[in-house]
Amino acid sequence: MDKKELFRTLLVKAVKTLVVLFTLFSMGWFVEQLPFAQDLPFFSLKLPVAVFINAVVSALAVAAFVNFGREAGPAVAGLMDFVPKAGEIFGNGVIIAALVFSYHAFQAAIFPFIESYEWVYQSFFLGFTLFFLVRAGLLIYAASEPLSRWLLAIINPPKP
Image (cartoon, rainbow, N blue to C red; front, side):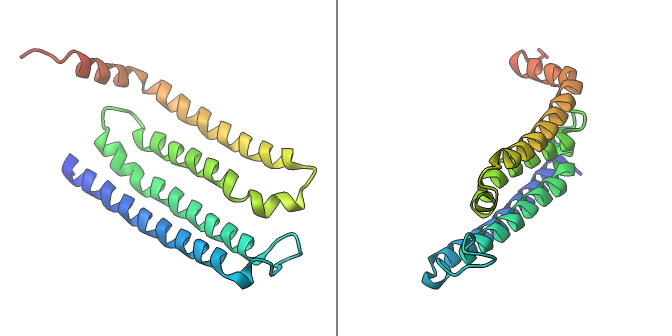
């Protein structure tokens, strides 16, 4: 596939993901606006229905976002063919972004149940984020020479 077709494929997958995310977050916003969902408990008085549904919507959004990273990886690898394993680097970046989003998205549903053990929640996300960050860093380090050549070619283009 040529670069134009790979870019088009990446753009289609990005727009598809944005539509899915917009739909999911619109659903979550709508449920938050319902007056009878604010105080209605789900498991206990600590967890209202609106908070639970937003946690489910956030989980679906994370799954859609990670799926975008998986599907778009080959297109990114084709567009950045000068970088070894560019698709994997992109996928790790997407997972890191999903973890940062997840940390904030699930706090309202989890913190009421672990009042004095928030450190476990934070340690869980820190561990996974560091794992994928180190993985992406090692892939970038392995690709440092082709990246350096590419950057030098941009800064100092070869003369004809």
